[in-house]
Image (cartoon, rainbow, N blue to C red; front, side):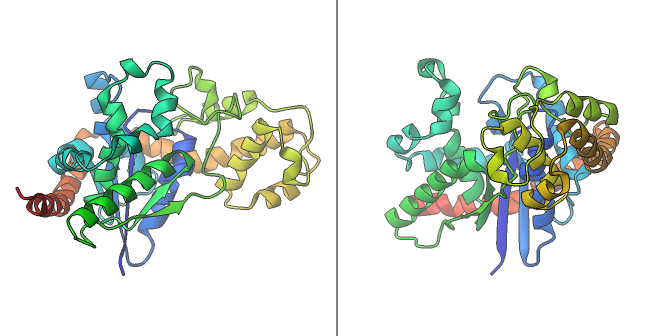
Amino acid sequence: MEKKIFSGVQPTGNLHLGNYLGAIQNFVSFQNQENTKCIYCVVDLHAVTIKQDPSELKNNIRETTATFIASGLNHEKSILFKQSSIAAHSECSWLLGCYTKMGWLNRMTQFKEKVGKDKERASIGLYIYPVLMASDILLYDTTHVPVGEDQKQHLELTRDIAQKFNQEYNKKNFFTIPEPIIQNEFARIMSLKDGKKKMSKSELTDLSRINLNDTRDQISNKIKKAKTDSLPIPSDRKNLKNRPEAENLLSIFSSLTNQSMQKTLNQFEGKNFSEFKTSLSEIIIEKISPISDEIEKLRNDHSFIDKVLSDGKEKAEKISSKKVAKLKEIIGF
């Protein structure tokens, strides 16, 4: 059976090391697996759940696409497209919203975390975001979705919606029930300034993250200033408990070198972090700088990026338009 993988990244600009290790690096490895079809989407409809500057959004869509390609994603082997260019995503989202229970959405912890006590001022778009995500996945008969800890609940909702629709219309296999691909132990990369917070563009200081378009000097400077503690590197991971910044930097090194945390601890046991940071900077520069250089080449080649997205749209539309047409037929339209 062919494996079909779907995933998307929001075009928020300046994708960072956390995006690369948690998602993009895996996109590249998936496309090289046998009997696997990969569909990757720049999810710009999701991005507008918060206000966007129009010209900045256009630039971010192109930059996100450029980052995919610069990271090694082959747009001829995988389908790469812009979400808003496919009408079926919005259409399917409305239809599936009519089969989604309010109680399911009320349990979404990510919505609660984002709006806090200001629920009454939150947009409907932010509230129904998980239904659009379900539509993104279900339109392509997706069998597997790579998910991090913060998206597990959304995939569970996708499965609930698919199963409910299939049961209501007695169409056992109309919507494929997707399985999660759980990301590896290092997928959740934390802030360089606070090991308890996820690395994010929204954090005010740029020193909290390694952007994929950072220069070699910027990378070196950020790692030098990354928060650590005064204790040496231990021999056992259990001794990293209550040392989130130390664990985060060691996790980044382990992930970039594709080795276990224990092997990294064996390599640097007893050394202080000033020495370790030199090695960490070197491996980040080795892995990220070629991507940064390629992003710089691609980001201003608008005609190439637009052509990639146009070709991807054509491929994605052939699949999604057929699915939404069948969906409407089942409903009775």
